[in-house]
Image (cartoon, rainbow, N blue to C red; front, side, top):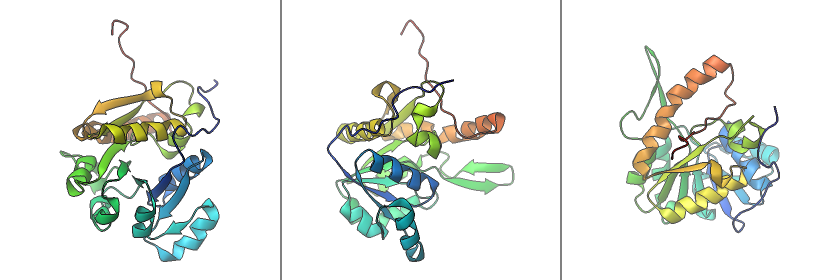
Length: 228
């Protein structure tokens, strides 16, 4: 079946400087997606030895976490969720007043299997509490890297969620989602940062669905009743 939407990169806001903190699969995919849409992208890495290799692979500068945060208008947290708060605290001065997209979900290995590292208060909330002068928006944590940057390749519409306290920060986030191929009709604002708990808890259902499908490359869609 054919996908939906447009695969043509577009920039819905003025060209922005984006810093991705983390250089794993998600960080690399998003860096390529936003660069293709015309944004200026830099990656922050804690591994000096990997910088030259990553820069060559991605065609984008790879610098220290502090330098990346200082250079950017918008920060994107794609670090392991169990490490995010401690790492972001080290660059709190560089994050002051900026928009921070939090995409991470933390996991721990338990005797019964994988569990969330933030089972009661979300990682998004913890980041906002640790960085009160930073405007945190939780998003993209309910899909994998391939779908994050290629929703048009799904066989039908999918929904992506936003949680955060700052309306302007969510507008910026929505525009950046549009640039990855998520139309406005696919974006659902859940409300304040506390609603990030739902996004993160979906990770457990996500893994169940992935096991049933034999693939991580899927989306979900909120389908309202026709009376709404």
